[in-house]
Image 1 (cartoon, rainbow, N blue to C red):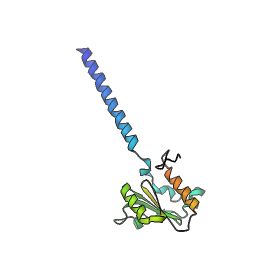
Image 2: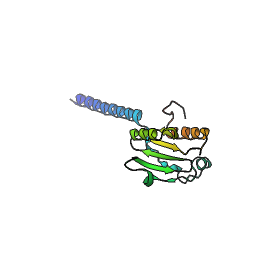
Image 3: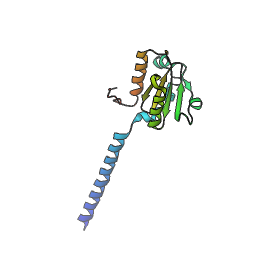
Image 4: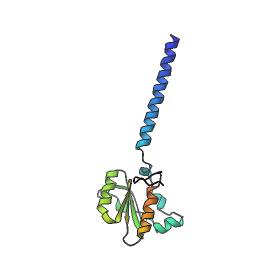
Length: 143
């Protein structure tokens, strides 16, 4: 009788371990760390690159986010405005709304001020944003 009980315990432990591994694999396959990017990293940043790309960055959530634009965070600078959304579909809709001056990176939309950054600077900023918290971007670029 002890043999059967021991085997049941082993099978039960094996089933629990297998379920935990499957759950972890599903989580890792579907989790995108860019969803959790906090736009506050650009407000008051001390490094020269950030000060050049987003000079005078300040919070604008209360001013820009609302029923019409359901963003969770907004940061405005002299060169661009960034919006972070809880829902990816809202981010896609905002990027389309801002059309030619916008860039979509996950749940963040960047709206560039016309003429404030060169094309190369815009691309550099976009790649930097795309590479936050990921090893490979949505476009397959290795960071």
